[in-house]
Length: 113
Length: 117
Image 1 (cartoon, each protein chain N blue to C red):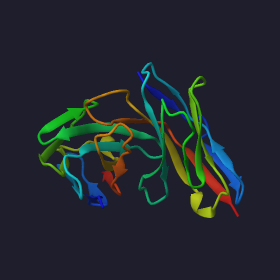
Image 2: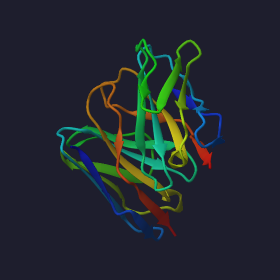
Image 3: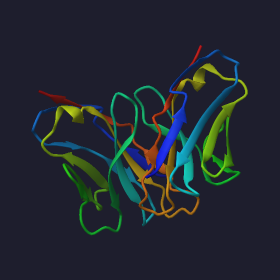
Image 4: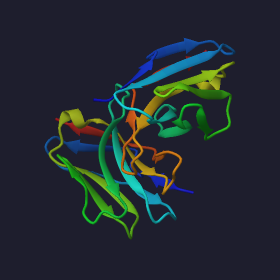
């Protein structure tokens, strides 16, 4: 069966520090991969998605970036964090079919101080 | 642009009773899909049920069913026989049309359901 791993679970970082969140998927090949962010008590906002290695599409302009160095690895990065980057970050994968749901990792709660 | 609206920020339901969580959507795409997710306090997002825009019947999955009214552009989630473990945030989401660039979902703002013993 497929599993998705996301780490770390929580992270406290000072303003201006770099960020690297990692997500890996097991048990499937060539998944679509996504990074979402959730502000406290709000819905999910799509940040990035990828349909293949090295293929990244950004949904909103920001100081975050994403990379997909391997088929089942998706990384969210920042060179310099802002206070507004605080939130709950969720990685997800889906198969290519139209009715395929997104399967989410357990999320990373990021607090920028 | 697509939009998902969940008008109930919070709801209470008595244990063992049924509850309906509202979701309306707006899209100009003839082909779309609707999803419901549950988010417990732990934060994980759990997929519950899916309805395709061309599906003839309302989707059902155990105690979950989807009241899909295409003309009204609504896709309400019905939970039967509520349990204490159903207390969580519930999100309605819509797949963005017939895209070939990934199965992206747009999410509503969520409804917090609280089940009373």
